[in-house]
Image (cartoon, rainbow, N blue to C red; front, top):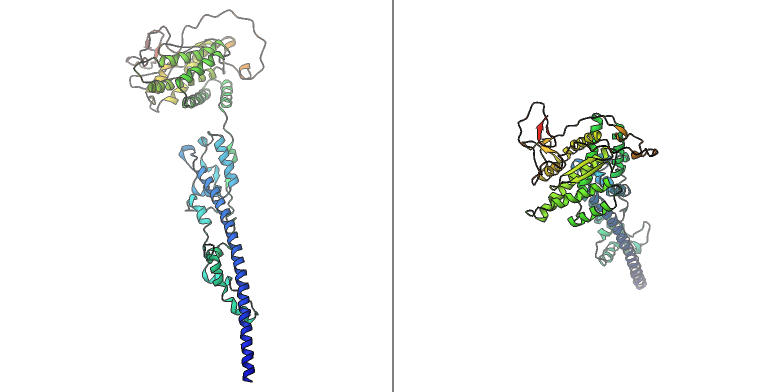
Length: 476
């Protein structure tokens, strides 16, 4: 009996050992395959998370480069909301990149952050925090790899306790811990929460180009009767012309190239009056580069400043008379001063427009106290006939509103110059005598010593305005 039981026990024991060995081998293979599959999935998730994080960081970084009106920028909650909505963010970036003037007239509140955007979090750190994956706790990982089944056999239950250890060894082969792998189990690659901000698209309309904006202002100016509103439009035209001239001056272009450009413009001019403007600008630059005591850098600096004011003045003046490029004959004297003489525009209205153009330009190149922004701005204003008193404060020209005469009155809305139907040509009129006066000092006046003549220290008179009468300064 004992012998039989011993033989039975030995056989049973041998059978269990073989089953356990076979089960452990099967379990090891399954665990290795499972860990391999987990590792592959984790790498794919890591790539997708990294891609999203890089896209987010790029959007946040680019949006952070924009400076809006008054120096303001997007705040962190706005950046987080936009970074979580890449398509909207890319649309905003494209609009701001394509239209460089847009950010200058906007404040960041054209976009409102989502209500659920986190507070107290830096936008640059948000994605790292959002996709930080924590390793699974050890007890949970052990439970996950417990292969014992309820109602399972004795062999299953004996082998089950080794599943965690085998999984650890399989994960170590890939250079990670089992807890790190299982930490990605429930991680979704679409973890960015749904954030819905508010966009005011009406503020993102494309900024009008220079020519379109100028054309609109010219038309409004022509349709507006004399008075404060018309003066305001003149200032807007002057501001537009000054901005364009400053932007042109900021371009990295040599003196020689500028001279070559002017020669080409003279050759391509549509009228003798238009050609005279480019010729005057050419002669102006020649005069400014004639001083042997200045370095090339000084000549370039003063030349750019003075021609900037000159361009702003001529463009404003032409705009004020209905965008007539043939309205004036332009000249430049030996000191680089720019003068305009009416040609195809009523002399009375031309004189009025000259004064208005200068008054409108003064704020562009002076401080609130009336002094010039710097010496270059002062010289630029002097070169178009705007002068300063003994305290260095600008003297605003007097506008004399004279009734216009003949067919050269200020253009009305709908005239050929402003897009209206063109009438049949009128019979040629006899040549009118040349106007007796110009708002700027006459060419016959004493030459201005470098860098330009300033009004003498005359005793001010009550209610008088210091005026150049063509021969001398006097109060009127």
